[in-house]
Amino acid sequence: MKNMLLLYSPYSKASTFVIGGINLPNVEIYPLTLKQRKIDKALFYLFHSIKLEKIAARFRYPKECIKKLSCEYNQILCFDCCRLSEYRIIRALAKSDRINVFFWNPINRWYGNSQKAKSSIEKLKKMRMLLSTFDPEDAVEYALELKKNVNRKIVENQNCPVKYDFYFVGKPKGRVELLNTLRSFLISHGFRVHFIVVESPKDYISLIDNIKFSAESKCIVDITSSDQNGFTLRPFDALFLHKKLLTNNKRITKADFYNPNNIYVFDENNLDGICEFISKPYREIPKSITDQYEINQWIVNNFCNS
Image (tube, rainbow, N blue to C red; front, side, top):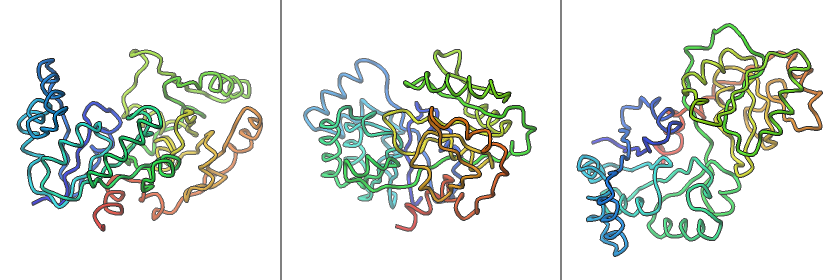
């Protein structure tokens, strides 16, 4: 019997990428796939509305998925994988009493406004779910356990020749003006800039290509969107690849991996400091610190010893 079943959403490219780095022998990973026919969705919501969760499950998940959820595991880890209605099904089917739910996105992206989110979180708590988040403000707002963020460590590209000084990739998310200001400043100072703003499907790059571009850059740019307070994946790409980081997230100065030689916190008013920052040598961070954010060690530290 496996000690843990880890459930994740195969519809999330980021989750699929990070979970793909798991190689722990006592952890079985499984994608929580959904039936897509309209009749299945309608019957699912019908039986879910009258709280017949085991019957509702037949119209939500394929048979093999239901069978997997019904197996015996010491614990289940739901890695930011589904909505409230599906957690009810997991609780109804699971033989394990220990079901962990880790929110890897801000709570409002799952449950909307604060009042609706609070109601949903309270329902999960009444179901005896063990809830945690990477977001410090969500941890306080909804009384959740705060855990470190996590990423997949890929080291194959660490010795790539450097082609760019500064690299960014991401959706606009209300940060285009700041990105344009930063890009103009960097170019005006002669830096090699590679910014990819994902505004349509043609702009998408794979997560493997993102690692490749990161490895080919001296410094990774991280601009946190307004609804997120926890760290994005970019600081950990920089940490694992031994790259510098340029970020607008002031919280990072409190992180255990923070070093002013490696990380510069900027806004429109202190761009001039970037030139001095980028000329400083990179300082190595102890492996004991970096490993805490790697997916395998993160699981061991947060779940296997509990």
